[in-house]
Length: 138
Ligand SMILES: [Fe+2]
Ligand SMILES: [Fe+2]
Image (cartoon, rainbow, N blue to C red; front, side):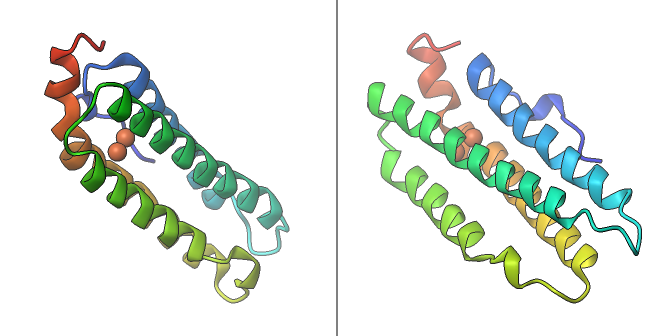
């Protein structure tokens, strides 16, 4: 299970809520994978939630980018590039083609996604924290 830590908090409520939601979707996928038995046929369900994670990640990136534009954040381009590179990566993973060792593959994929997102939060997202807080964002 992926745990939320105080260190992940930016102090901007709407963004923190979205980051928590990403973790929550990650945990739902994790749960499905843990409970998955050899003969189960619930990959459709697992894929659906992975899609949900992708969609929510894109939605979250858009929220941040809209804020950057609104508040004229000077590091917009660099930040957006990280978002775009990550979207390109998750979109390059074609879940339809996964046959062998699905559970292990999906666990690894989920781990990679969650790791990337939280590294991004504590490094790149933290770079806009003070800028937006100073401008009155909460
Ligand atoms: Fe973020
Ligand atoms: Fe971000």
